[in-house]
Amino acid sequence: MYGAENGDNGANQFNDNTVAELREQLHKAVSYVRQLTTDKRVLIEVGNRLRAELLRNGNCITAFGHSIPAALFHYLQFLNLNFC
Image (cartoon, rainbow, N blue to C red):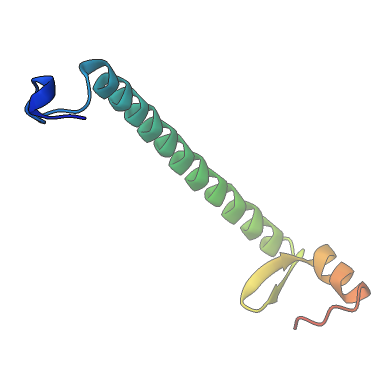
């Protein structure tokens, strides 16, 4: 129990080591989130470039407002999946 019995008046239930460990974990988490955000942005840019290249080369079909590779479109037709 924390409080006057322990001499800390309930002011702080964590010792300095625990606070330092939590701070370090928080900094690591922030670093991981930043890296994931950067990776996500790069993957989106690469995907957009690939989609644009497929469209320029006539290898894409637009369905439901999204460009999909023609090969995938024909494969879905082969499977008799009517999505258009």
